[in-house]
Amino acid sequence: MNVAFEVKDRDVAGRLGRLEVNGRRLKTPALLPVVNPNKPTLKPREISKLGFDGVITNAYIIRKHEHLREQALEEGVHELLGFDGFVMTDSGSFQLAEYGDVEVSNEEIVRFQAKIGSDVGTILDVPTPPDAPRSRVERDLETTLKRAREAVELDEHPPLALTVQGSTYEDLRRLCAEKLAELPAAVYPVGGVVPLLEEYRFVDVVRVVLAAKSSLPPHRPVHLFGCGHPLAIPLAVAMGCDLFDSASYAIYARSDRYMSVLGTLKLEELETFPCSCPVCTRHDPDDVREMGPRERTRVLATHNLYELRRVIETTRQAIVSGELWELAESVCRVHPRAWAGMAELARRGGELERWCPAVKRSVFVCDEVSKGRPELRLYRRRLRDRFGELSGRKVVKGISRPYAEIVEWLEPWELAFADEWLGVVPGELSWSYPCHCLVEPSGDDEGEDRRRGEEGRRR
Image 1 (cartoon, helix red, strand yellow):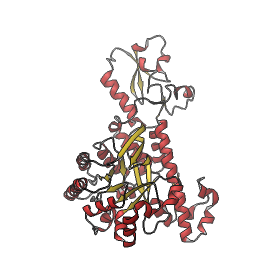
Image 2 (cartoon, rainbow, N blue to C red):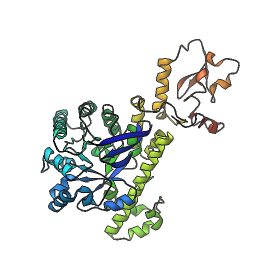
Image 3 (cartoon, rainbow, N blue to C red):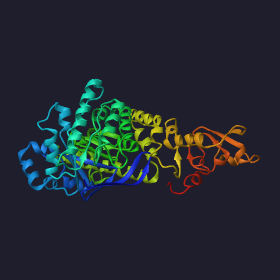
Image 4 (cartoon, rainbow, N blue to C red):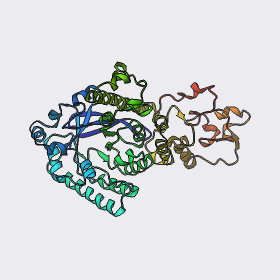
């Protein structure tokens, strides 16, 4: 299996990386638009021109339709799609979840994906709906694990995506991830979350993703199946997801829905397009409303892909800038349930400490959710575990940073400062990260430029 995953930068648990499989490279975080091999809303070559280096398509549908199957077996899936980039294939698990059965075995679909040249192929895992009885989840989970073991032992298989299942049971998600981590995989997807995303159950999404992430190997990317909404992507990247796939761009377009920074909007309600992509600069809402159904769907789908690309690119830059937490907070504030997911991530910020950089140039704090940031949790833990005795010091309520400057008649090691965000700041740490790098809603801008960037680029 010729697979390499290189991490170039990181923030919170998010990673800027590069996945290389069989010579094809994919920059992560990455969204793989879903392409229907029968009736694509946009052709893969058009998706490529919009800036996407990878797509995902359904090997089960290709195999089921004779004309697609014969062409794929003869020419390969890349030639079938007319796409020379990274192609991942799904196995039919979505159809299994939707309809309860598929006309193929795990071995057959895995071998088929190898024959058509999938860059990454998926096992026929068994997605279990949220809140299912535990006995059913355990049965389905055992089937998924059995099929994963079967797939890796086949003499013919593509680089594999071994999917973590377990419904809404965190312990079963961890168990599944632990067992799959023992097997060689190119990608580890977290499956069965589409119903949670559709119902905006972001708190449960955070719980199941973190449960899986905690036991997956760090040298392979994590894929969140079915996640393709601008509201969810920054939060998911902050949890440690590297890959996403969705047909949302086309599904939304077919029902005249428009993705934006304001959320998902209905075309009929739009006065103007709050976007400057090529679609929105050439058209106004009245133009698009007057189009025929097919053309209107294509135009909206194209815009939706531009919006998803904007989110991915913004998230990548936030990782490099060390501002992924700030981005996730700002995006999640758009919807109360997304904000509840962000609050859940903050409550579990201790689970992110091991992934988060030790030093940044600044840390923005706004409210109680910000107090759960892994950087602040890491500071409090290190202070507790590594710092000496603080008894006997004068404890002062800090007013402005750096605190040591406000009590000139005492030496720093005689002082400790009570801080709303950090808890306690020993005087001699007043100039160190993160104590002097916090940017808080104090209303006082004096010295902000000095505090921000004092340490230089985060490392």
